[in-house]
Image 1 (cartoon, rainbow, N blue to C red):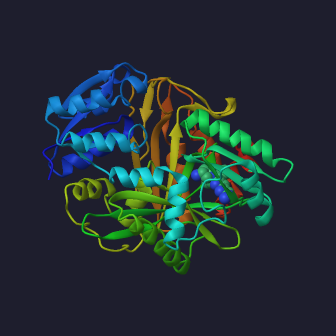
Image 2: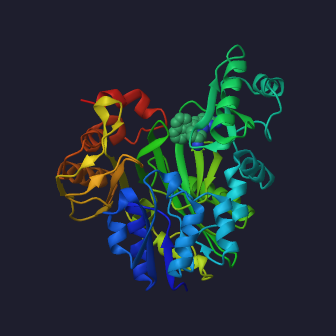
Length: 449
Ligand code: MV4
């Protein structure tokens, strides 16, 4: 096992990884930007290194500085968390070349899944259902339009280098198509330096259901059930839950088998997520694979009792998975992301000083957060300041506990999404489990008060 792990991240996930290392008896190194000097991850780690100015590209994205920090402190592994360098194949390669273990999948696995068209191809080759579409990237607008006319409208044009909603355009008819195609292509080119796009049939109101995957270097690949992440705003998830209100034991077995088959196709190692779309008619399709630990991983930890971050670290050290199949699910779990944002002003970021902070507690409540009274939320990074995760014997109890937790969350100094989330817990469609990816577009305005 490792002696010392460097955490190439900040915020709550840096704290989460430090805790896992502590439990495993592993020393930790925090890296931080000049804006994060007063952060808890710096205080809680055994060792710390300032890696540069506030802007991420000069600190948390600066590969040479992070590698230098690992070499100076004698770290033998790096945990990338999520975001920043977590899905950067080149970074994983540089770690390997420097004899530092990257706690995550191989560079090749990151690369294959990072190219959404290549990932789609790999799934097709292994009989994992994908949304009907072009088998690979399309060369020009005529080839793309030919598919659209054959399959029928609406269709969605997606950037091969994209993911998370960037470089996507929907075309509802042949007239709209050329413009949508050009827009997707140019957005992909400017955002990713790669204008490669593919086309799929567009599903109008699917659920976003993702399966947690764990793989090890001994050939074991399992899934740990699903998370329903249908409640999103501009491709940012606000609420995640498990089990999905739409799930049955039979559907979980079938979707879970498909997810495991897809991960096995690339001999996946570590924690990963198979993102799938579940259509209103019950058909399901692979969409993308995320090759990292995700923000919403505590939902799966609470419903299964498996510590995903400890599994990641152990597996990277060559150990077999400590869990060999899906454990009995424990009731129902919901996570709400608390952001320092003002919902009344289009969710604009609200950084600043935290004057008062008293997080909720009680049975079935977990809070993952890096903030404290007296902390200043910097304007440079993601606006998420806390995750509230609540478990109940069933979904109704999980919702009651979440509502209570949100309403007793005392946090003053910055605007937050807490009141918005609290009203969401009262929404009749949400309570009925009737959610889909267009939910907030349709119902969100009513939750602004
Ligand atoms: C889709 C889709 C409908 N049909 N693909 C959004 C992010 C990226 N991962 C893919 N996304 C979608 N792909 C087909 N063929 C709808 C979405 C989508 C979506 C997916 C999950 C959660 C929220 C979403 C919001 C808008 C669109």
